[in-house]
Image 1 (tube, rainbow, N blue to C red):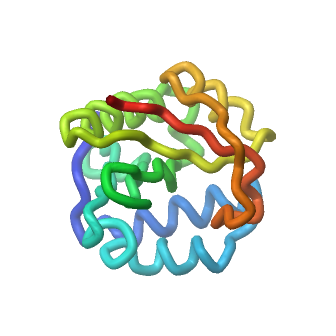
Image 2: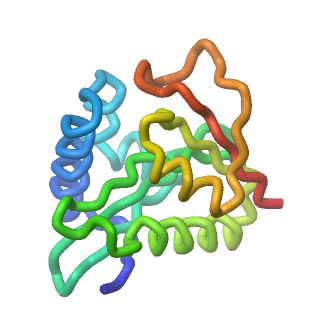
Amino acid sequence: MQIVEWKPEYSSEFKKMNIQWLEEFFWVEPHDEEVLGNPEKYIIKPGGNIFFTLDDDTVIGCVALMKMEDNIFELTKMAVKPGYRGKKIGQQLMKHTLEYARRKGWEKLIIYSNRKLENAIHLYLKYGFEEIPIENNNPYSRGDIKMQLKLS
């Protein structure tokens, strides 16, 4: 398995994996449709990135870093295909993403999540994220927890 950076040819897999995950656990919101429908516009061009885990040539997982403001990025759209869950792929993506953000000299990462995703919350806490107050203009109606990791 290897982790690679965004390439336009991965965009359909990025959307498909995230839609599948959202429909399995929640629902697809308009904000999701926008971002997943045009990741180049909403994630890549503003300075973010998307990483993919490949098993041979098959995309099996992904995570995105979406710019919120200078040196502050949202860690978002992490998904692993059902047949590959439980194999620590999320942890590999998390390690890779944090190393990347630190190399870039970013100040912090933000995550919006939901408390029912206990495994995800456990992963975020394991890597040093801390819960912070969630604002009223949270971009996700399903989000009931906001976390941050200070990188510097």
